[in-house]
Structure formats: structure tokens, C-alpha cells
Image 1 (cartoon, rainbow, N blue to C red):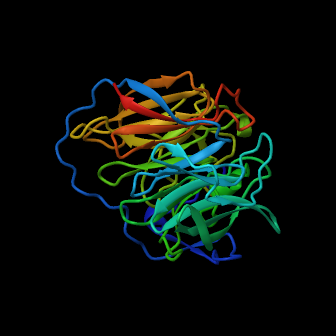
Image 2 (cartoon, one colour):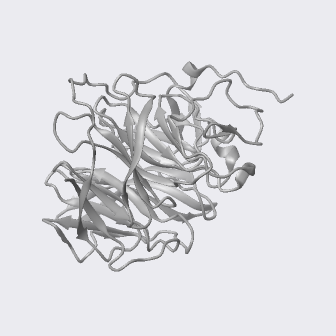
Length: 386
């Protein structure tokens, strides 16, 4: 019978990344525990009501946009996977890119310029480059200079990429002021099975690159993270497409610091053929999963159409070509009480972010070589409750 490791979850809290500066390696070692995400006290909120959107196009003609973030002045910064950072200011897409990076990207593959986060005067980017050992992912900060980005500072390097698939790539600034990043396992399941590898993880670091650690592990290809009003972290992760003998079972996870989320031993709630050897004795299951259908979830956000109403979780789906809404129990953050599709007909959806105007902002991804482009694609849409 395969050996099953009895891993004490308290030992997993705060796995400090070592050797991961400029030109750094790709290992992690246990360290002392550190603080979890901030948990501000939530005020009494009304229950979520019905949600219908009026959809307006903010920008069109984008090329495989991957992520967006708001600056303090309300301008929108977004990435295009071929390597460009674009700015939308006062509802207008600026023609010159703020930055053009040399990245690795190919037809049908998932690498390139991916995540973005903004905390002025800096913009943080996650991107893939051709490293000496193959495709490699890097997190860097850049300084905002007018409508341009300058002065790259590498914060975390040496995140192993794949030949074509599973690069993760989402960046978010948490309520604790720290930077969170998702990494895929590069289509190498054993990477996610190891707590000491940077792949198949949610990582956390200070905005200056210090204090780097593995926050949670056991993910196949997490592409979305979001914090609720109480500072609790949630993530989306893509399930298998035939690997390890399974299909589908995409998942949404309530993320606890130090926890193991199952891959490659589990896909959603179903055991794979990977086996138990070396796996933790306990794993944390998803709060929602797609079953035998495929969502291919990417960006996620907590969204409320009006002040005083409990926010619900919006999930942008690529294969599912839908914006899904999950209602989470106000008294139990690990329980989904209902779900529904609130937007369809826009093709593949890559990212969704709640804006400062009580509207949500949605990126399509029909020009990523996997979709069927529609007129004007790709788009950034504004979704306002009607």
C-alpha cells in the first residue's frame, strides 16, 4: 500500500522561498509561521439580490488580454499576452503601449505576459521568458513614469514554466499589503505534489520582493484569486483535460494558509490515479467544482452592485464561455449556497474585476488562438447592474 505522509499542517505555514531573486532557483524550505491575510470586521450586510447586467464596451481590438487592474485615479491598466501593457484613461484606450516586453508565447499555448497589479508608483507584472532551462516565469515591479513603465526590478525569478501549458500567472495585492501570485505546475503534476517547489502554488511576498513564501499548495493551474470584504482568500483552478485519467472537475477554493488543495492526488472531489505516496494526510477540498463539465475558470472577483449588499463571487470562464456567480454563505466562508450564470454570448472570458463605480469589468479572450473572434475582439466590457 502506498506510503502516505503525515504532514502536520502547522509546519506548512510560511514556507519561505529561497534563492529566488534575480537568477534565483526554484525551491522552498520551511520557516517560522507568519501572519495570515487581514481579517477586518464585516458590518451587517443585506443578502444578495437578483443580478442582471447592462453591458457596455469600454475598449475593443485588444489582442489576447489577460489581466486588468485599477489605479488610484480610476485608470485601467491591462496586459496583452504577446507582451504589451495598455492603459485606458477616461474611457479611452491609449494607442502607445506603456511597456512592451519580450516574452515567450506561441499559438495554442498559455505563456506570455500574464498577471498585473497596481500600487502606485509601481506596477507588478508576471511574465514568461526563455530561460537557460526552458520557459521560466518571473515577477517584476516597474515604476510608473507618465504613461510608461520604466526601471524593472525583478522580485521573484526562476518559477518553472511548462513547454506550453499551466503557467498560472494571476497577481493580486492583498488587504495585508502583500503581493499574491498563482503558479501552474507546467503540466508536470509532481511539481504540485512537492511543498518545496514553486510550481502549483499560491505565493506571497512583500512588494519589494522580500519575505517570499509559499502560502498554499497542491494546485494544477490556478488562474484566479480574490479577497472578500473580511480579507479571506479564494482561488480558481483548472481541472484535468485527460491527464491522470480524468477530465474536468474545475474548482473554486477557499484558501487557508499552509493548506494542501489536493492536486495531483485529487481533481476537485475525485481521486486521480496519481496515488498517495508522499501526499499530506489531509487535503482541503473545493467549495465548488464543475463535475464532469468544463468551466476553465480564470479571473475571479467579489462584486456587489450597491453599498450595503453582501458581495458575491464572479468567475470568468474560458471553455464555459460564461460569467458565473457564486453566493457564499455569510456565516460560513466555505459554503456556496447558490450559483448562476449572469453573462453569456461574449465568447471566452479571461478576467473580471470589480471597479470603483459598483460595476464589474470583463475581459474577453477570443484572440488567444483557442477562441472564435467576434467583431471588435478582444473587448473590455463594463457590466453595471440594471
